Image (tube, rainbow, N blue to C red; front, top):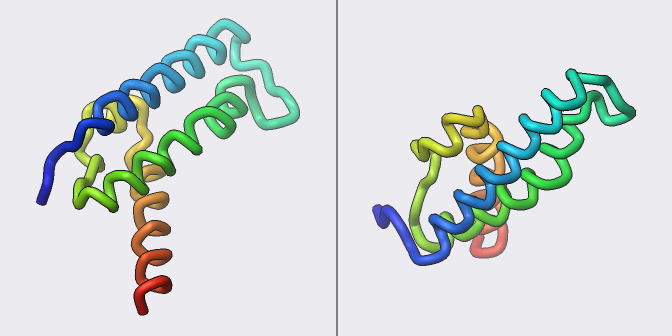
Length: 97
């Protein structure tokens, strides 16, 4: 299995930046609940999810798997990535099957 491709590291670093900012805002707001659940979660959903989906799609296209990435593990995003990756596999199976 291919372990990397040129766009992979910048994508992982962008996810880490969003996750770090999310943690920062969550702690800055003291975990104040907003209409989305809490400040950290709202940033996570709107900033990180599209980045994770893009990484999963690119990984699938390049035959790479970022499940063991320390960045995803540090921010507890492995399950989110694996879900996005399984969606890519299903979409590919439908398109080719």
